[in-house]
Length: 408
Ligand SMILES: C[S@@+](CC[C@H](N)C(=O)[O-])C[C@H]1O[C@@H](n2cnc3c(N)ncnc32)[C@H](O)[C@@H]1O
Image (cartoon, rainbow, N blue to C red; front, side, top):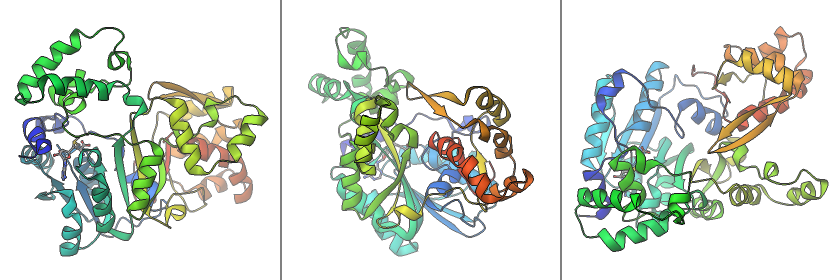
């Protein structure tokens, strides 16, 4: 049996109990439908129309359940196909869906079959592929398969591992493979736990504060340290894979984390040097300077459409707030001209012009930006110039999206 299939038959990932569905919905990126709308459909998709989605390598069902539940709540006629190599994972994913009265089509196949499924039943408007491509024997073939299964106006939400935030993981995988490689999965997990407990304080994995999956569950430990096939992608490597598959990145998440400027001295000389870099070079620089990225979440579309996919501030756009009480945030911005937020272990200062503070409470209403401007008796251009920097800053930390048809 393929060692990757063997792993996920023994340790479906992430570890999930269908009984938990009665208590909580697991949410995250990629594939929150409001994010999908914001990053791939300009925040303007008509969700009364059918939506065909593929969850490629769906595992125990996090993205499947989140998407299906949110789209059912919004009354969207969604057709979702789940695909995975692992029957044990599929069983957990389908039990979670059943616990919520939701349905999907389930396929035990390789994601390389995605184009064949699309040819049989129609191309996909959206493809989720989270934590899978870096486990394929030929990841480039996987990127191409997903691209070939995508409708021309569709998009994908992908997650792949990144190298610098996973420092110490790969030497540790090599060390454990040399010691335990041939043993049964459960024996490997037990011995790996003992080996980890004895690591010297100089060990790179032990010193890395960004990886903790091994502490959460046995499935997490196996996935992180005992995987038979796992390679990380730097920003340039990931962009090259996308390009090779006819895709292009719209945005990484969270967008602010891929801006190198906050990691450099705020001097004219550095500003001038940054200006000379392309968007892709700036993303790559941010990854190298920050050093904390252990994965990349990226929304991508067919090459050539990347400039037209993401929502921008417009009078028709309807804001969807994704954070704590925006009134409290408005008061903070009014007093301090911004706020601090921690992402992946790093504290970021998010500057927001004080003049934009009075508009923050309205972001949790159902009103479009045009209606918000009207209520403030401002013409659109005055509103857009006052609120524009706040829009970019809040979208940059994933607190603000646009979607007309999907409630938060
Ligand atoms: C790390 S898990 C991620 C699961 C899920 N996407 C998530 O983010 O929670 C990787 C999943 O990809 C599946 N997988 C690996 N290679 C695959 C392939 N070639 N085709 C389909 N699924 C695959 C595994 O069986 C496993 O369920």
